[in-house]
Image (cartoon, rainbow, N blue to C red; front, side, top):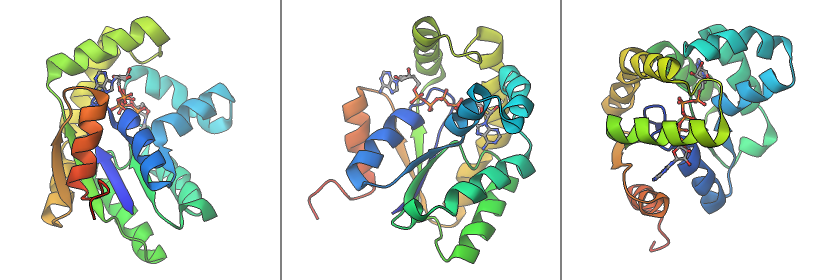
Amino acid sequence: MRIVLLGAPGSGKGTQAALLKDHFEIPHISTGDLLRQAVADATPLGMKAKAIMDRGELVPDDVMLNLIEERLSSADVKPGFILDGYPRNLAQAEALEALLGKLGQPIEEAVMIEVSEDRVVERIAKRAAEEGRSDDTEDVVRNRMRVYEEQTAPVAGFYEDQGLLTRVLGEGSIEEVSARIRGALNTDGSD
Ligand code: AP5
């Protein structure tokens, strides 16, 4: 199963991808996590990405394509993968389609997790208090939301046009959302 998870900052992509990973036993590939690891390791990529992430902007497409290409060439993705945070704009969606086309492993499902703005703000404020992620400050979150609306939201249409998109309500408990996603993917164990 090759899945893309879409949704606004704080919609629950990372949380749900971790559960899908256990369910399907396939890797969860989060470009945000890969970048945060690069920042923590102070690699050249991390040093380039940190200031951009701290403003809530997108890291350049060519940098992200190199990162995702390298990750998708690993042996562990052969049975499938869950992408979280990529693609983030139409150019990335097209680059991913070309890359996976070459590998003969196209995306099979795109799931859009839909959550109200109030709920997202509430969740990120809670995480900011608990974890102190450097891009969870009020101004940066506002910018991340703006970037999402302008650049990432149109990616849903890209997959909708291909008949691959399912929209799932991302409100309620983590378990409730997870059950909805599994139901939407028709993999809740009943078949
Ligand atoms: P990234 O890490 O992808 O950030 P994001 O999209 O803003 O997503 P978040 O991690 O904030 O939210 P999420 O949807 O994963 O929700 P989560 O499960 O954590 O990207 C960070 C930055 O990296 C970007 O701004 C950009 O600079 C750069 N970047 C990354 N990818 C890039 C790309 N492709 N191109 C260019 N730049 C890129 O949940 C949020 C909180 O809510 C958690 O505390 C969680 O516990 C809680 N929660 C989740 N579900 C529920 C629920 N049902 N009920 C209550 N609480 C819940």
